[in-house]
Structures are given as structure tokens and as C-alpha cells.
Image (tube, one colour):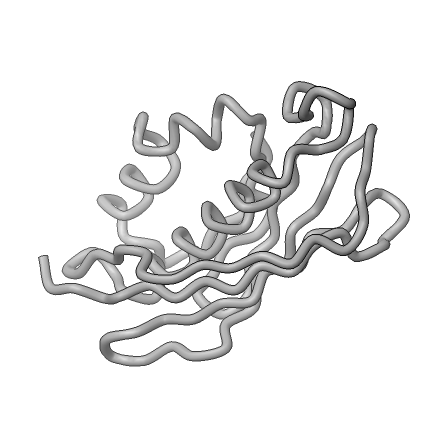
Length: 142
């Protein structure tokens, strides 16, 4: 896995987000983190192994990629003394894909004291938008 993380990412947060089995689903789906921060993150995922019965990338796989990236970005915003829980997610699928990799770009819309909202755009290898995911996390005290 190729991972770029902020230099000042707290070691406990790094362990929770990247090094533990807390990301078991992301690992099973082959998600690779390329860039991570509260404001802007990027990850990618293979289409192979994540398709539905007719060979298209499963819509749920889009959502898993989006939720994983939105949750990690929100957790970075919250820091090691707080944690986040997802309270809302929606996805609009606008195009299908049957091969290659998809890349998700996550940008913060709101980074507040109690809420963090991100928009995640998932694109194919040609840069075409496949889906748009919006996720809101509640920031809680540990």
C-alpha cells in the first residue's frame, strides 16, 4: 500500500487508521491511500474483485470507498482525543466501469467542532466521474 500521511499525524491515530485491523473492509477491497489530510484526501481501489453479477463495479463498493475516505479524513480532523461516527451518507452513481482502477478524491465541505462533511468524487482511469458521495460525521469526545 502506498500511503502519504501528514508528518504530524499522531502515532495513535496512525495506528487506528492505517496499521490496525480497523480497516479490514478497506483491505479486503484493495483500497490504497495515496494522500491523507482533513481537507483533501485521495485513495484508489481496483475494479477487479469488487464487481456485481454482470461485471460492473458494485454500487456498494463506490460507497465503501467514499465512506472509508470520508471517515479517515474526518478522523484526522478530529485528532487523537476525539473520534468520529458517520451519521449520513448518500451517493449518486452516474457512470459504470468494468475494469481498471477507480480513484476517489475527498474534499472537506465543513470541518466544524461537532460535524465534518466531505464530498468524495470517484473517477475511472480516464478521469470520467463515476459517482459522487457526500458524507457527514459526528465528532465525539473520546
